[in-house]
Amino acid sequence: MKYEQHNPLPIPKSGPYQSIQSTMDSVFDWQYELRRQNLMALYEKGKALSWNASDLDWSIDVDIERMTRERREAGVGGMLNQVLNPPRQLDDDELLQMNLHMNAWMLSQFLHGEQGALLASAKVVQQVPWEEAKFYAANQVADEARHVEVYHRYLTEKLGLSYEVNPHLGTLLDDILSDSRWDLTYLGMQIMVEGLALAAFGMQKLLMPEEPLIQDITTRIMADESRHVAFGVLSLEGLYTTELTSSELAEREEFIIEATHLMRDRLLMHQVYERLGWPVDEWVAWATNTPFMRGFRQMLFSKIVPNLKRLGLLTPRVRAEYEKLDLLRYEHLRDSVEDPEVAPPEELVQLLMGALAPQAEQAEQAASG
Ligand SMILES: [Fe+2]
Ligand SMILES: [Fe+2]
Image 1 (cartoon, protein in one colour):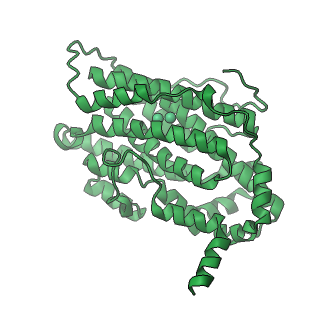
Image 2: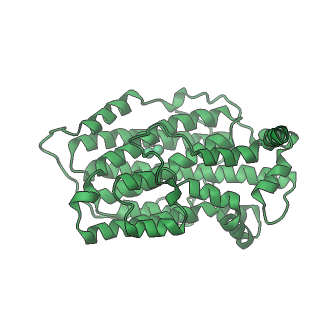
Image 3: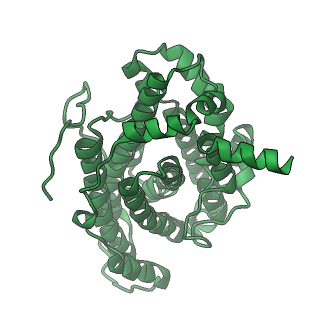
């Protein structure tokens, strides 16, 4: 696929290539038993539902400035100041800059996460002992290449604004790729990173209702990602409740807690404030404390928590940590096997609709009051 890169991705200070050292076993399965029917069914589904990035309508003109202007004309700007409660009131131009940069930042992190998923799923192909899981992981490799392609094209051809990988996401991807244990590749990528991504993609759709290209991209990628997360859950099912020693389980708990902290911290977006020349400490403090941003970060765990529960990983230690972070509220939601169609939690929808459609809400309140 040929496309014009108006603005290439910024290269990290460390250089254009990065090698992650790891020692892992590449495992042959000479039995070819293909006994795990749920994985075989997922593999069939993955092959049938594959799509071509070139088939998207790339002629769509993506104009975030126009979109923001139209929102402003609809009176959303003042409400955004209220809902976001930034350190100081932002004028229209600053709100536009914030919208452009946060959107580009978020999509850039999706891109880098997708490249991480590409490498991690290739690693699963080699490490996982069962042939049927290798089949599915190979199918996932092709999905992830397509996701990298689509986000890269969108960022460079359509937005012309992008960010390098966030240090917290970078650290988490390093941890996942350097670990020699196959289940931790899955746990880190399929359960934690992709679980969070699913919720974040849902958020992206809600934030950009007027932009048809990103709606199409996100709908397609979410369908793929929900299979990837289900792949993780189905592959790891039973492992943590029957096959591990208590010290092995403790290592997994440690990994989950560290990954959770890295994923929360990555969402403070300090790179955006740096680029905009806004006082970074002040804005990071805002992102840490303001109810809207806190709510947003919390909701990103809405798929992870029920999946961890299904795997038997919501152990007393993990629960204690999640209690502190107020994440246990999601433990009763449906996991990725029960609910492969991913709907963002009702709370998330309400929060965003409140921010983006304030007048409708006010009118409703006035009518009902
Ligand atoms: Fe992906
Ligand atoms: Fe994925």
